[in-house]
Image (cartoon, rainbow, N blue to C red):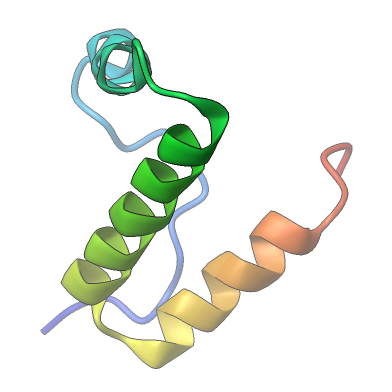
Length: 68
C-alpha cells in the first residue's frame, strides 16, 4: 500500500546525480522541446505515483510560494 502523504523532505539517492541527469536530458533541446520533455516527465511520474490525493498535495505544494 502506498503512503497517502506527500514527502517534501529529501528522499532521493544521490540527488546531485539525478539533477545532472535531468539537465543532460535537456541538452540540445529548444525551449519548446524542453517544455514538452518536462510535461512528459511530469505525466510519467504522476502515473507512477497514481494516488489522486498525493498528486493533489503535490500540485498544491508546487503552486505555493517558494518561501514557505
